[in-house]
Length: 321
Length: 271
Image (tube, rainbow over all chains, first blue to last red; front, side):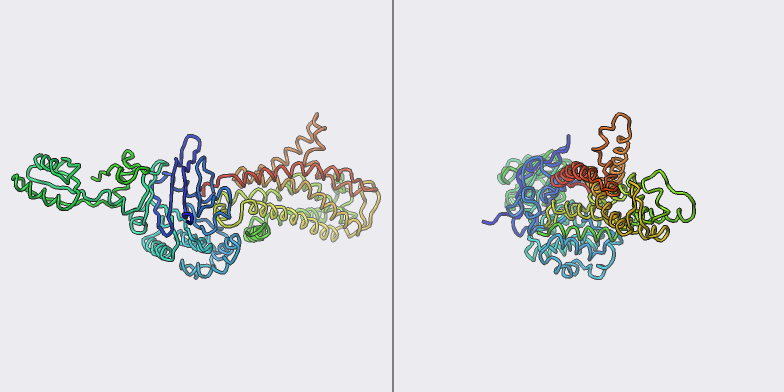
């Protein structure tokens, strides 16, 4: 069995009193687009730096394709490319010279891929200009071009679309999707939820240095599935009636509505008939679908509702208001 | 994996693209030019300094006098200009992470930088010597030179001695480069490292003249800036050169070793 592109166990980084990363377990499978989410300061960048061997974990270890960047140094980064925070280049050199420089440090035939990489990120016509005159978006794209020179099997991108204008964001997403389609595994940190929901197949959510959810995006979205909200002519009685029905759980009376989770659509149908039979009129009955953003806030701003280590069935449900 | 020379080549290209690089080289060339200009315009000579009395009789005294004056702060500063900046500037610009996430190990990156910092110091001082020989010879003639023991050597032999002196002078100068690299790696701040290196050099000279500390003087790095003067005696006195040859590595080797170890293990955050 080949080693997964990313496998980190118990990654911890302590700076004085601050625990920037606390026992982070992270696993990215081949072919995934993995979204690494968390509020600013949650520890995403610290983790990415540890994965790339830029900083030493206080404890724990990281493997990229089974190799340890701390023990093996640069050679553990074979097939791995990316950047943490904004990609940085030498402002007094041209875009092409910057790429030639990093290609020289890559060795092999990296230099021969410069033209293709510039073409891919659509910077070919500005490659002769000094990077000092580049816009933020152009530098982000040059960062991707620099990564592509390494013919990566794994791309680590730290908030690649941050600071880009809407068109730049769209182009960046298209590019990431294209690279993923080419078979590159992508680990992408972001706090742009729609970006992650659009691009990613798996997510890891960190909060105050701890991983609070990790798993397929679909599973996360499914934790909020089956939730309904209704308003009736008598919410108190409706809530009481719902609480006694099989197939419904978490029936709660809230301000101006009743919410519940239904095991299947049939349970909802039966509830509506039962309410009618009891003389309770339905004013509205709507399924509540949660976006990743709502789930994200529920996880990162709640009291640590979800526990990443628990299997999905045991995970506490997420209340999405 | 690309080697140290690949790193050095690119470090050199980076230097060539930066204006500050030329500042140090220009200063190295300007010093003898200014001195010769002053000689041409004014009377008198710096009689107290070694070779000061000979500057009007032989142009070859001028590079030697420059070596004497330059050791106070000019050459340590020029050496520090690149050595103190070469790691710290990458820290400040955030480009360290760019180069450390490629396929070249940290050790090679470090030594590639160290080689270029050393070459820069050598280049600067060589430019100074060549400029001083040319300008000095134009002003005072390519004439035989009076040694420190009062005898005269031919102009050709004096020229050779100037270049050998330059070689000996490099021993402490490379020590200064090593201190610059250490401070550059540890402080992560270009200005602090450049100024700090110069301060180290000035501080050692200060210690050397403090009363009661005469015993320390022979073991200070900056005292070795005089070692070459043994070449300009008849017969040649090799003792100070041999002394410098073992004292300078006492500074150079630990400074480089610590800088390298710090560079290998340090966290690259920020940027």
